[in-house]
Length: 347
Figure: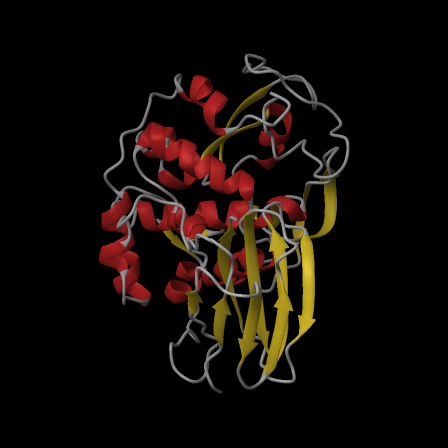
């Protein structure tokens, strides 16, 4: 299969694959697999955590909704009305039901690390969530629920797993946050790579390594729920506080390049390059290549804004009417492979 090339032409545009300081990932260029994992680990390991108590104040920068409320993924209902919302300061350690208070949720459970004290305060994976739902999740693996024994008010579930490779009890978040959680767990796996000597094995992990059944699922979640503005903003805020970043938010391809055994920059994988011409007569996206299926375009909050059929091997679309902002292009080949690219449109 031939490579796919994207030629993105936008009037006075700025193109960005990653939202991070210039050169931040330079040492990872040209690497894949374990070499890329090692390179990313070395880039993000020099962090400076705040204390566990100070996380609560730091959340005012990393997890504030546009309305000023705490951004709790276990109560949020994107596009709908949340069943409850928290003001900052409504945190506590005791609760009797949903909506009582929020606390600090370790997406990579503390018990999986044998209560590693440094991991405990990593703001890139310790987030504010409803205390009662956090307690229900406990230290269960994330997964896809077949039969729910309990369902939260926003639709998160606890129950038996239907994901191939595991049949125990799992916790399933709503679809809108599955990609967020997948990229967070990938971050922890790379950040603490070879620093996990005292960590334990769980249903989902073996020290800092994510088990195969779980990684297959997380890669699906990563593809199906691409990076949105919430994650970008949180990653930037966390970087200002802690000094390191989640590379899987900055570049979605890194996940495939490390954990997808079929990844290749050769003829058997969907690849693309992006060129920007600053002063074109038209503003178009041109797609060409063999064995293409479809191209999807999403806005920064993950809403599908454009679909076009690429089976004729060459397609173009006028994007001059699109508002300034971040967009994501997802190209699907006939063999089911996909790749995501982020562009920033400014005029």
